[in-house]
Length: 187
Image 1: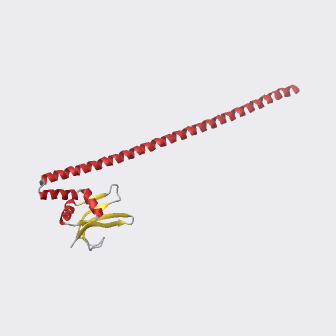
Image 2: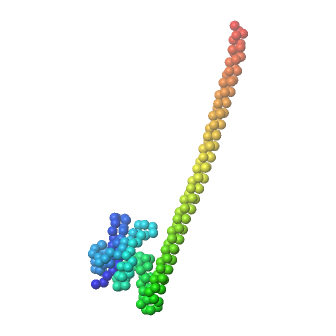
Image 3: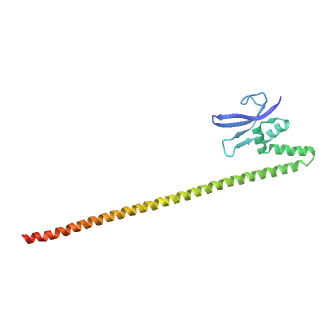
């Protein structure tokens, strides 16, 4: 019977988590399967794939047809690259050791590219956080400056008010002194 490599949905509503399974064509999506060869979690960034590489390669070599999404996953993981290289070995284009060396070179190149991409994303996040922090510092400095100006204006107004009260008190005292001087003279 024809077999397919496809995704079997797990997880809760709105948070899908998939098992990569080998099943017959007639089996329902989440129903009976022949073998589970891995998992796929699209909720993480980047998506997490745990794959039994040898079993997936074995099934692809046996002729199991993957769905489009599974084909992309297997291609990213290198199953199809390995199949291509094994085809070259079968045709006699190169030997098994050369095929392994080419596959390892491809795998290392892919991992280096992913690491570079991850570093670039982290650097962008860091730069964004630094820019946000600088903008926040600038805003805080402006607020502190405005607050200092407001407090200085309030202090100046309070000092002027106290000076005015002191002047009124001095004026009242000065007006009271002549009256006090006149009062003893009148006695």
